[in-house]
Image: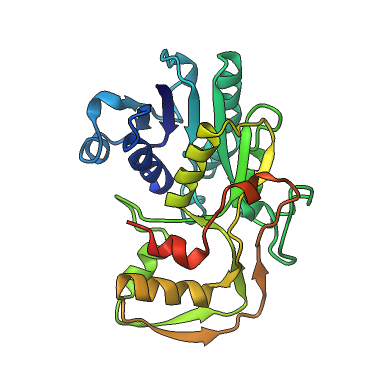
Length: 276
């Protein structure tokens, strides 16, 4: 039985990864949390480790894990709430965690974002230089521990359990309303559920490698199409108006490496329909 730790087990990504792995009896799953109510209303409290990434030292963990999956991060809508804390969590914490894992022979899987790119070109691969235009993208760019862990660069959508900052949450909040669907904003990321499946495949098939990999869906869709998918999936009765913004935003990813093609990632529509 493999013992894994999920950092940030109650966030949008982390809660999905925890839920996925606890269904598999081949794993002994632990997770970190800050808010006890959120954590223990959803998961086994005996598997939770209270951890505040700003004040607690990751070096104090004393459990011998096989894998650590980092799901802690400050997303763009909350970046400016406290810039200093956001930069620490996005830029420094991943290095601290990667160093701790490396010193203890633990495999560390870290997620990063397509927002390290400016979105003017599209189909960025692993060799493209970072050129983020905002503080969020720059903070995530600094937080990629190259040579110390497996870094999966992607973009995610998913369900939350205690906040309403995701694109899906926003779409649900607009039920029955008229909304703009951007025709010239493009995306080929994955769902949080698909990310959990990918992490499991990496572990099960011994695909772990200390390198950077782009993980993306085969198809590229517009934000307009994504809203159409949400509309049908959640029966939102949205009236989606096609809208072209002044600036194209295309942070779609591609890969020069073999990992992504080995993962058999479904289409974006299929992934959204498979969300629970």
